Image: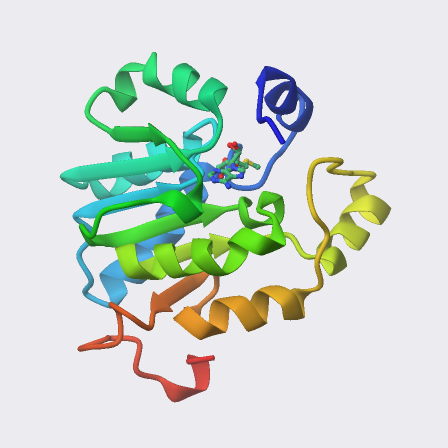
Length: 204
Ligand SMILES: C[S@@+](CC[C@H](N)C(=O)[O-])C[C@H]1O[C@@H](n2cnc3c(N)ncnc32)[C@H](O)[C@@H]1O
């Protein structure tokens, strides 16, 4: 599907409260606190599906990384963000997550509310590409269980999303990542060596 202006107008209405957008600053503050506690530096960030770019903006302000990269399949999202001064030095690309190329490693990846739009046939490659390119991934995805609650409590529907049970994402993500904290995954390809997230109880 196409992520055009219509998608963003529908999903990000002026009076809407999309998690990771209206409260992007709080998400960034949470990660900053956690990474400081763990004595982990974040010098490079890669956003897999940057959208409006607000989360990436707040992560950039909070961590002041020296390198910021990102992809999004939406030409509209890319054009809108590229116009903004904040993104002047960011390396952004119009690209699917599963088609991300290159080997440069980032300290922190972001994948906030993106996987529910990726077709089944591209999930495995998308997750693998993310795990290859980052040490840690800040990851959120609404599952069918979450959509049920969102419909009931907030009357929120996303006609563009593929609703999948949490076991679908658990199965795919666990092949390449370990959950080490709320929203924070460690890459099984790049993250494990010398990890500060040593508490076995939280390594899922
Ligand atoms: C709900 S928005 C989330 C945007 C951003 N991550 C945030 O937290 O605000 C979903 C984004 O995923 C992007 N997207 C969907 N499928 C994608 C894919 N296969 N590869 C890259 N981006 C994709 C859409 O274009 C859209 O910008």
